[in-house]
Image (cartoon, rainbow, N blue to C red; front, side, top):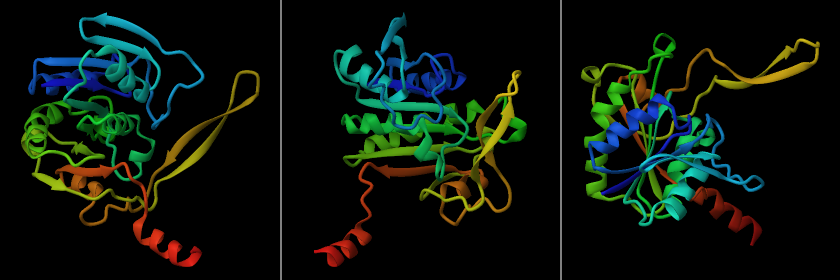
Length: 253
């Protein structure tokens, strides 16, 4: 099996090393194409107005000056002579659950693989305040290979990717697997943090305001992670809302 891996945190990210260990537990034919620099939060963006710079680091390992989506396209359409049988994006530092999937470069890379007809997985390792600087990569490394193999054996539907989040606990403390819906937070909002530079000119950071109930509804990916379970969520490329489409058709036609 030929596997392509990527990571939105860049070619030197520790999570990419974890992903490589996972991929090599599945196959010896592993290709790595990742951004030169951290591309967290770029979602499914493409570099349409800037050239892509490609750097070969070693055999089957490449860095691209571009987004995670750029990397997947470069890997499949240019670098690899034969298309991969599997794409793994991650392991992201921090969970990609609930609304995170909209912003995530990790999930977007798996989406691009799916668009290009490659079975694709997005992997993320949750952390808390105490493990922020040392996520438990070993949890994803230990549990991901068997999980991916099992899903691949069953087969993925067309235009569907699998988003997997590993809980912030040791591998032995994982409380099982939860096939979960995408959650929705109710009190975690983006905010603007204003600061002043050395010349008294204002500049701004996008930041998160956290507090209150995190909206981990029953059966959601957030609830699974809170319960120290691995959350597995299939995501569709088709974003059409069928029930409202039916109502609109009745209203407008």
